[in-house]
Amino acid sequence: MSGVTHSTTPSADVVLPCLDEAAALPWVLQRVPAGWRAVVVDNGSTDGSADLARSLGATVVHEPRRGFGAACHAGLLAATADFVCFCDCDASLDPGLLPALLAVVRDGTADLVLGRRRPQGAGAWPPHARAGNLALARMVRRRTGLPLHDLGPMRVARRTMLLGLGLTDRRSGYPLEMVVRAADAGWRVAETDVPYLPRTGASKVTGTWRGTWRAVRDMRAVLRAPAVVREGAAR
Image: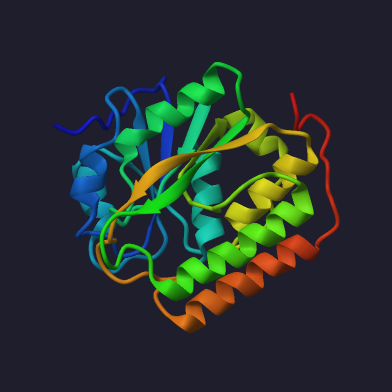
């Protein structure tokens, strides 16, 4: 039974950027922890994803501007819980793992926790996408000093702190910008292993070499940007 709730005071909000993910939504939403709210951000789906998500109990937000970052940020702005989680909506990551990540933030060990993807089975992570991620991880380590190995989409932080970062990227660079600005603000950033499953359907970003190259280009632009530390971003 799905743990999706419409409660006005959920334990956490789970932001799920969505573009034509009807095939994966039932599996994903069923695994949202009980008492948590699923915020599905529809980014222009044509397969009925929004209606399906709503019928399964999720809160649906419509973001007409195309872009992974646009969808993620719309979900952040719609969140109301103290803790906000991000997770892909393609069944490659299990939202049921999020409580373990949230616990690290709640107990004060870290301010931002990332899920380090560990591929499970053939096809879970295409070679070109993995190579691009490894290259970016090295650049992030040089830029921030953080000992990170992955820039995975599963992550948890406090809502007010995330809003304080003033994130501006609305494309593929959004997850990286979050990490870079968090580092510049003095956040404690940690990562923990999570299983990475073969996704349902084709990736809109890293499913091809061209898509991967565009994502890497967006992220390199984030890395070249000067450090920005906004007042109140760090605790």
